[in-house]
Amino acid sequence: MDSAVSAWLLKKQGYRVTGVILKIWEEGPSESEKGWGERTCCHVPMVEYLCEKIIGIPYAVVNAQLNFKADVVDAFKASYRLGETPNPCTSCNQKVKLPLLREWAEKQGISKVATGHYTSWRMSDDFRVSGLAMAKDMAKDQSYFLSRTQGISPHNTLFPIGEMTKSDVKELAKSAGFPVEGLLENQEVCFVSEKKMTDFLRETDSGEAPAPWTVQTIAGETLGSVPNAIGLTRGQRRGLTVAGGRRLYVHTISLPEKKIWLSEKSDLFEDSFSIRDPMGPLFNGLWSEAKKVYVRFRSTMAPVACFPVTNDLLRFSLEVASDGIVEGQIAAFYDKENILIGSGVLTRRGESSENHVD
Image (cartoon, rainbow, N blue to C red; front, top):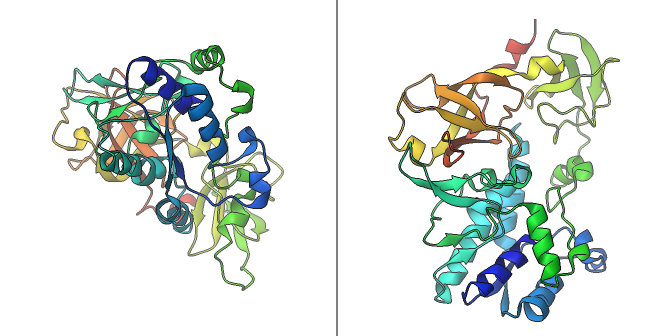
């Protein structure tokens, strides 16, 4: 719906628009028989109908299956096997969706790419750079998921619905004759449901029976074992088969030791964090002690003020402690006006699991 309404708006504004869908997955028989809104990805029949019958524009299908498998799916599995919790939507925007769209557009002599992301370009007064602003509809904001995407600018990438709310887009779609009830949203990872995450991550394991993982609390209380912890993430409670008769959460996972430490919710809060692979203008000499920056660890999280504790800008202190510091996720940095100015990948490396056991 978001991409279709974006195309419809651009056509109304006088642009010559071509619809493009990246085919990232080979649909099996069961998937192709589902309704539009029930499919997990690659809605080619939907795109054909919307472009030809509703919007009145040409469309193209770009095969991105190899790129998606290597840069998103395989990287997703590899990250979990390192004890991280990856963000596949961010990786997809960074390495597949936007780069392939720009590449295809350039070959066609098309100067701009537009998407249905909820974000918009604004100038940061503090840092004097153009960045992606948080959306008006904070529940749908996608500046976070674009925080690792390089090479985009107001000159080559447009976000037509960036300053609209989801309800605004839905009403516009209805008035334009879109089949709104058939355009349902998939809130899970597009290539695997959360319920099947562990099974999906085991697909490339050897045929050997996995050794059980020991489960204990950070205070040293042994709670038992689980068959496999690949796919669990810090802060998770659902899916644990041992809980010690009380509400406990995943605190730390050690792959080499095949151990999981659980804790109370309050033990997940931390007042500092580290990052690797920094990118963006914040890390290109724009930092100043006089300018406060704010960070988010999730797309729906309210920004929290932070400041560096090292000169290399790889470790930060938080003004308010957070339970969202999960290795492999993204730390997106914003200025005081909620404009994106940089990002990094959260890391807990160098922190021994022994630090969590009394």
